[in-house]
Image (tube, rainbow, N blue to C red; front, side, top):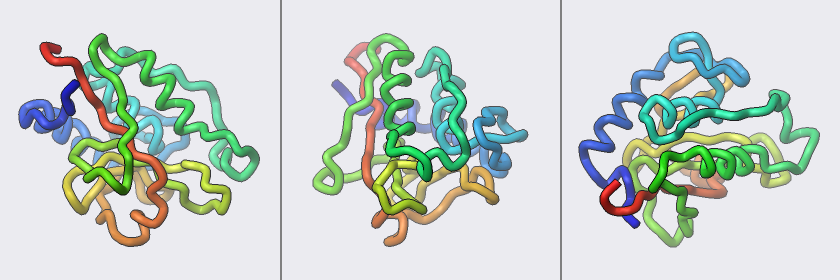
Length: 164
């Protein structure tokens, strides 16, 4: 198994796709570049646009779902995505903080809640920046500073079998 974004060409295409969303406003459950997207749909639709994910299949979830349930909805959708990945691809759960973060890593944060529910997500761009769809600010690049690292709870990495 190989880390998919280790390949410079794969990363260049992915980074171009991710950056093309910058400035898209936040819209709960939206998935249209330039019109509106939430953090979960941003990652899913980007993977669809890159031809890595075959489709998105999301049921409705309220904007403040983490306040009313203990369900790990973002983790649930990562598992749904796993089934919709193009053949040869998979997600590997990174042993964070023991393993170094790499470009393209899928970051899951527990913010604005004391239950530890992963309720926000983004993609690592480099050692100290990540891209995400933020409520009120839309798709933007932020520094992966102490605040974000404190709330980082889970990391997944896209891998593929050789020859894919």
